[in-house]
Amino acid sequence: MPRLSARDLIELVLDQGSWAPWDTPPVYGDVAPEYAADLEAARAKSGADESVLTGEGRIRGRRIAVLAGEFSFLAGSIGQAAATRLVAAIERATAEGIPLVAAPVSGGTRMQEGTPAFVHMIRISAAIAAHKNAGLPYLVYLRNPTTGGVMASWGSLGHVTIAEPGALVGFLGPRVFEALYGKPFPANVQTSENLYAHGIIDGVVPAEEIADLLDRTLSILLARPADPGPPPAQGPLPEVDTWDAVVRSRRPDRPGVRRLLRYAATDVVPLNGTGQGEADPGLMIALARFGDAPCVFLGQDRRGQTPSKPMGPGALREARRGMRLAVELGIPLLTVIDTPGAALSPEAEEGGLAGEIARSLADLVTLEAPTLCLMLGQGNGGGALALLPADRVVAAQHAWLSPLPPEGASAIVHRDTEHAPEMARAQRIRAIDLQAAGVVDRIIPEEPDAADEAEAFCRRVGAVLEQELGGLVHRDVPELVARRSYRFATLPPS
Image (cartoon, rainbow, N blue to C red; front, top):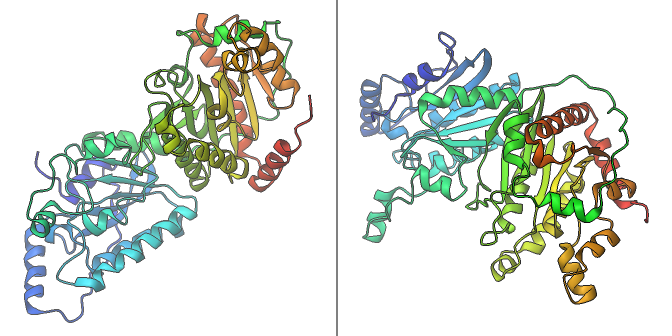
């Protein structure tokens, strides 16, 4: 497929007639005659005056700033003039408080300018960091190819990062590798699809779908719901035996996070992995909106957790990425507990599972963003506890939380598993018991069982999430953090 020019991509993605360039003519100073000839030839070939175009436009009426690479200008390489142009655009977007969308395509730093150009990657990264620190979205679309210093700076700092299908994406250009080491770089490593499989990018999307994806993403990130006021009073719940609740929570047809999002969410943009080379199918990470209430969504996926592939430490590293995103984007974090338990294996031990649980707990208790936890089903052990600390905790009626599965507790105390129902009752693991203990704030009824009314149940949960998230958006974050720390430090004895 032919490579789109920067102007072609802008015309394809932005609202018609909305593009307004920000660029001023590049300034080079004294350059060698050979380089001056290269620049002149690049201008003639590309029709552009530099390797990046910057400006603003609209996506479905929403104003955004754009950084777009032009590969036909010296392979999209970034010299000092291009870097100065990028920094000026990033700083303008930050000052004007608008989201920033980058579409790099580049072989990296401009070799004709050497190290002085190379160190400008620091300036670009610092400007993007300031944009993100202002709570403004930074979204990246990696094109074919994106390598070198560009991939190692503004190409890898997105809140959401997707790539063109089949794109060459990586740090070291394969031609450089072969020249240095005398052998070709392994095939299919530096592809967008492989990076997605390893949890480094969030998706592989053709250019024709970028406008829709940007629209959904911005619909979530820029949503600001009205304050819904205090939650309604909770009516009485029918008594359900503890062991009956456990059995119901384990039904294979019980709705999990996927059906919750399908039936209850207004918009969803799935994310993928840690961004650092790990992805765990036991955790779903996404940007989501319930009604007009936005959130970063972290849900333990009952479908992704299997006996052969239980939730491992990578899932909690993914979760901690989501926690950072909530802080950077200034929107609430929603965690969803539904797990038969984290992995118990040599690989989990060597992967630092215990440490990841501890770090997740510490991060959540001190997180500088509003937090909401939904106990949706099973809540086994430290893997469940790792997503619990929140400003508000709501629970499905038959959800529960325990240090071990009741069978494991029975094995420790009675040296058998037959006493599991007795242990479940004794350990007070039900949502209603946790509400009495001050851990759960609100219980969502099942009428009589979520598995028998999946769509209605999910919509009921969604309405509660919309109300709770909407209330949290309007709270003072430092006050929330202080109250959260105090809450979990002063849980009453039961």
